[in-house]
Image (cartoon, rainbow, N blue to C red; front, side, top):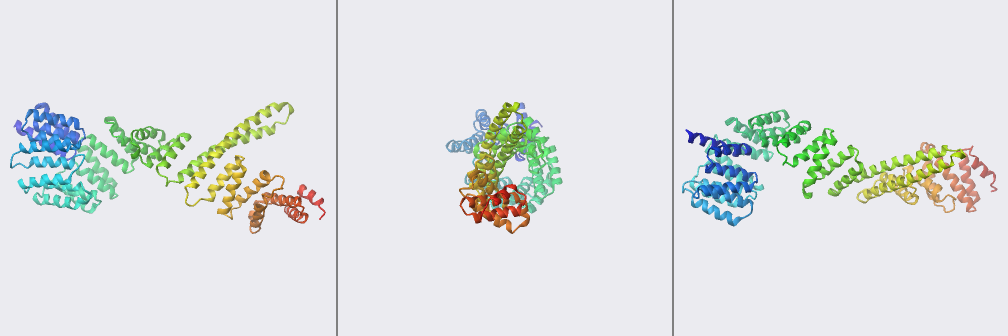
Length: 558
């Protein structure tokens, strides 16, 4: 009875491995070893669990212990072969496998099957070697469903092996109509191939045969999720968790499911539960950061996402990681740092040229805020009229000048950012050049501002504001004495454009007046009195009460 009970417990542990409940399997084998520290099979399967978890050193200790307890047990040598395979040590793997086979019983296919598992489930799968050992196992036991299931798993490791995998799984069900694992494998393969129509009946058949077969539930959950049956998906996960007694592996899978299904509030709760037990799942820091962002808890999302970025190799970082990170920085008022990460995101994916525009807009807003302070100080200075306050006025103007310098620098940064965007744009937009022009205009960089507005009028010839800025720049800053004629061409073009649109002309009356006065003065200085008078008459027609225009016309003798 004791032997039978132990056998059942060992079988229970093996079933847990089959069902991918590695932590539960580990507890089962450790309990067996507490009763009998020299239980060779328990040592082997515990070592196998560690090996499947990539804990090779712990696995090797157990496999070597088997050979010290029973040097003629194939299990110790097979297990060492598993570790050698993960270490890419083919020479020692071949050596221990030969030893294992030399101690195997002639009519027992299990050693060949165990060796094949190393080639199937190890870190570096080898289909050819797995099939070679499984063929030898079939020679010993031709109608063993487990061999066909393993053969199916071997083929499933290859992208183009899915057809052969399915054939072998179906062969296993032909041999044993009630083989739960075979039906599960058929459903799993179809589900992972997105063939949900065929996957569902196979998975339901497995569940019907064994309602406690744990892995069927997350597969059904994900099948229901991708078939837009979310409530059924959540129910399957609820059953899954309860059957696993909230095993860590199950919690990990459930938390991942909630994140993928965009249930961010519950995703956060489940991820935090996982992290309270095990902090080694680095990707959960990423999911946590994303989820906090999606529910509007930006400050909480920054630390976990930063941890993920800091601890993940650069080659594995995705654009979205930086995107979520810089957005949370911006949402929490950390603009300078946010801009740095914004450019990191752009450098990771240079097709995202819209980032360059966002970056430039942020700089532009900062510059505008500084400029407002400068403007406010100038207004304050204008209110100081008493002679007694001369020193105060001078101090305010000095402060204004300092602030203007800061604003100017920031506007230049913004225009550089817009230019960088345009450099990487397939179709440059007039709007970008217009913003560049405005930034440079406010920075008092009139030559470059004029060049930017010229590009605006070239790309969008009907956009009047581009001409208006060019007129102001050339009349008031570049040719203040109306001697070089730099404003002639743009004034002529603006006048022609406004002739066909009386509404726009009315809105731009001041600029039109500026053009008439400028052209009048320019031609008068060129000794072309008739043409100069013509423009001043147009100015008078536009504003009959303009004293300057009236005075100049009185003095003309042509």
